[in-house]
Length: 364
Image (cartoon, rainbow, N blue to C red):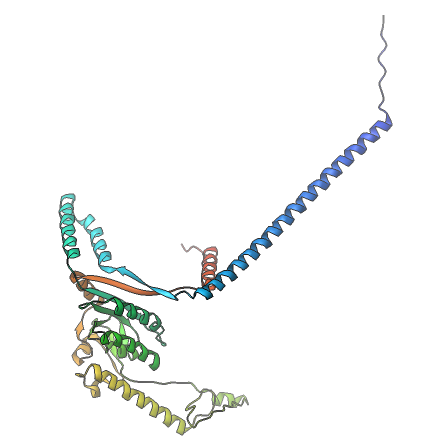
């Protein structure tokens, strides 16, 4: 018996059409939902960014307002125990130089020596640093450091000042010298240490000390006054450019950059320079009366060894020798006035450091 094949069932055209329509609507719905969530997440991210930025601005403004209200100190004097640092450096070397047995004996003796020193009331030496530019801008820190010393110093305490300056403006170096004279008025012995140069305004500061120590090849002296200025008057004339300057007072301006200088103005400037030089000479003579000013106040500068012969300094040595010597006698405290940075300065410094790190190119 032969069974005939089953007939193939044909799908209903209406059902196929409905199925396709359903799939199309579902995919369209899912696509729309995906687009919606994408835009929504972007909206949330933008909103969060704006809110955070507003909070940062508000926080910055609040901090600035609070700083203005509280008016905190502009900085503070930082102190470090230089003798302890020197001892630690020596210990690091001894650990490699000595064997175990000798190192143990050394450490025992050192501990005993430290205990004896701590039990004794010893004098203290304060170490200051002054690196002068043309404007003697380091005087703003020097005045704070000296104020701290005057308030803390006890009888027998001394000050070492490492000085390095080739001179600069008369008024600012005069102020720096006056700051050092505050120590003298407080009966605190001051030694100026010159490793490289103390000339002109730098030497004006040095003479206020009770003792001046210089390295053999340091540059010392230059007790003189100089003024130099370019003049562009003829250059402007060649280009048909007029320069007009209005003053009240016969010598309000003696010489000028762009105007035509006169013999009267030049003579007045020389007179002012001579007067300043005379005051400089008198200042040096007051604090170092043993000097022959006719010999040394010529504007010349000498190396340390010659300066010793002329009486401009009292001893030849490096600052390191004097500091080690002071550390063997008592405590040595190094003072450094650190100015407090404002919020914009801190932000600027952080941004600059980040930029430097980003663009840092290694050199092989």
